[in-house]
Image (cartoon, rainbow over all chains, first blue to last red):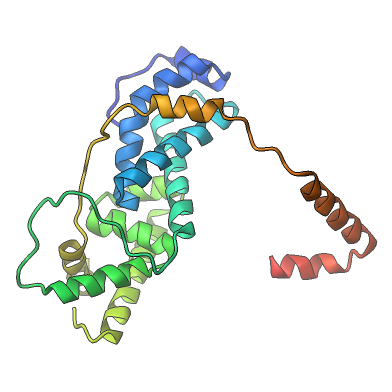
Length: 179
Length: 71
């Protein structure tokens, strides 16, 4: 995570339960955690709540933090778990939120109906597959980063993306859409 | 990446937009409120239920594999 380097004492103070050290780390990492979570859940309001939840879990787990390891990577791992819990808890039939601003206008050649069917099929994917596919296919994050954040191997991420693609294709074909 | 994945990726990116919005404000005040909240108390009947479960498992250890199978 591209944040300013922190003195080692700060991490040791945090690991010891110091609230001021936690505040410094919170202010330093909140934007990074938020950006990671919003990519997964695709809803800024939910992402803010999950950022708070992530840091709540971080604060409770302060004693387990090893000051010699990367705080950013640890925070991202916890944020990923919090986001995954949210995806699992969200009802499957709930439409996939996508209130993020567009980077580019959609291709006119792709029919609105097809896009809606794809969005619905994507929302029906199991949470772990949806998370891997979101980060790998939509957000184009490196597989290594996804693997670190999800606590699995790169091979396992590739397998989840493969399974997600296969399920999406099957679902779309059942709806009469040829991707 | 194979062709199958590329086709799905293209359709997916047309349907669900990638985005990178920034955080709109400082979340520390909300974090402080969360920290100041009392941790929820476990109701007494939850403890009673747990005690009953532990007691029944001690009296009927044969049910442990059945319970583990259904968990």
